Length: 292
Ligand SMILES: C[S@@+](CC[C@H](N)C(=O)[O-])C[C@H]1O[C@@H](n2cnc3c(N)ncnc32)[C@H](O)[C@@H]1O
Image (cartoon, rainbow, N blue to C red; front, top):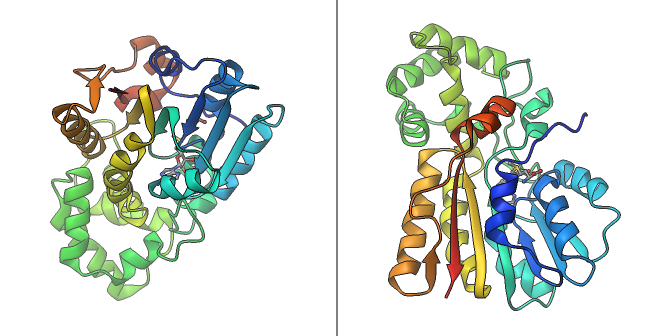
């Protein structure tokens, strides 16, 4: 697999996180270690870098990328359990937290993971392959109403009902097993608008459901903020409106309880240059809070 994941808004993350020698920073979505590598250079060897990811394969890439650094601990865990991770490591407070949500390019580009319909693959979509429920399970077992709700709620698909009905019809003929099979069902069910393939939103919604992405994000933010030292920073990069809404509302609660300064009243977005170099940056929003 080639190393092609470009960290989004790297300069902005470093500027606001302000990692200094000796700091303890938790990268809650270490991925292949793109952001972590730059943070590690600034805080180690006196500091500590903890990298969490729920995907073992991606974590191996981070291990490789960060192998020359001492005091760098990588943990296979869902970030919603950050409290257990830090307790196990004997860490009570940290200087900074980073969340770069969603998928890395390695996950997206690997046909066997089933996240993309660019090539054919089994409809898996689990970031953590030790979890039991796959996209295949949802697609072939949920009711039409349940599928419709997923498409509507997680990607605002305006043809959610139509897609769900088409899936039910296709299911009566054969199980829906591959990414291409699903993409073709969606393509036939709804009209193409603009340059984006009609299956894009359906794939996004399924992935969010399989990995319970919004539930995990809602569960982790308040736990994580409680671990910050005064003046410690939390940086969250989100990639769709459902995620950004959760971050915005959670930060607001902590602002109202005088626990967090909001360093970004409005989220920061990527520069035109970054978007042209890295299409993944197109929908990115960065919010930063500072513990009071
Ligand atoms: C966008 S990538 C991170 C890329 C990384 N910042 C870099 O520059 O290489 C997001 C990563 O977060 C992981 N992830 C997503 N949700 C997670 C969760 N709830 N717990 C732990 N890891 C998660 C994914 O497996 C993926 O590797």
